[in-house]
Image (cartoon, rainbow, N blue to C red; front, side):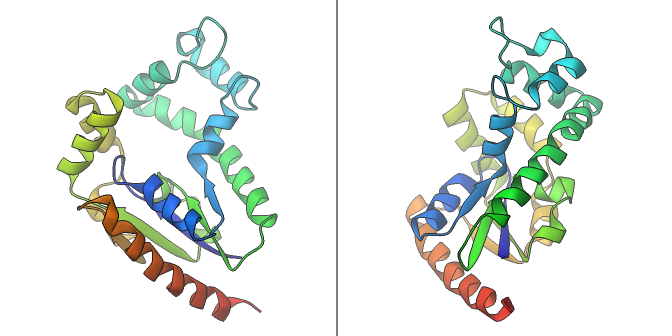
Length: 202
């Protein structure tokens, strides 16, 4: 199946763009959703995370303390790599299983850390980047999450730069204005991807 990887920094609007594609009937696989399922109570990655990081990242009810884990991995690059080593192979396997079960001309796979990991290129036909100025990313994340600007800047510093992301892009959606500008951009790309997918099918 023709596959488009959707990425962008935190607060860039990936979820909104993915929703626009879904509204057009495009199957969407979100690796963040897969990661949450893997780390939910009883999830297949939870025991490995507890073994690696200890009870300091667990709640009293034995569920994952996501805020504590986020603080830990953003303060320690080694811890972040350790978490990625636990999650990324499991996420990748789940993506492959979901893609194999889909029908349609093409699918969208939302991969926030696509540029950082470099691990999905062989699965993807195109890379679509949602782009906006960094100041706008910070403002959006502060407004929705309760994080401080400095905390958001720390997350941004741990991600690929805007320039690195744009360099990896085959296609770009600019999300610097109102959300109303997105459906038209998505509709244009949707037509483009349908043409590319039909041309690539045997």
